[in-house]
Length: 153
Image (cartoon, rainbow, N blue to C red; front, side):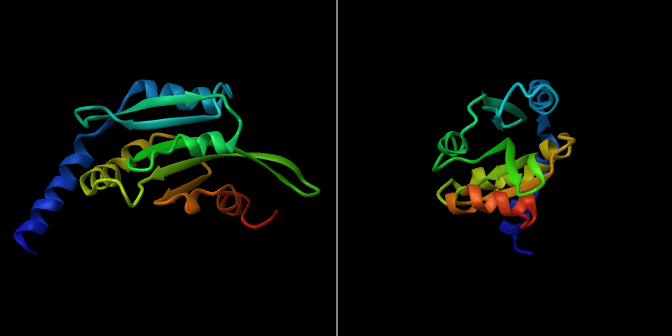
């Protein structure tokens, strides 16, 4: 492995083991999951890149409103309470975890978010599906519906 490759690997490992999940993030998630207080939560890293914190919460039930909150040039994590209907079976709801890492985001930001994702994801019990998005086509309503309903719609 080249010297630069070792540096990058060390950088990734440093972030992976130094990033923690803020208590407020877990509280907000539980409010969404158990109390249905929010429709979605946006998470990001704090300024010194040591904690995953809540950036925003919303009660807006429009999936388009959620998509509008995804920045074109910045990474973030999100949890969305995704509701859909299966014919002859009724309405369903699944919690979906999003890793938003747009192609246009800075490489360093993408590396930091990729390496710190597990810290948040492992602490969120009750998530039904994971979606990785690098552009808006990968997080479209229909694509998410296909994944959460496993093609039963």
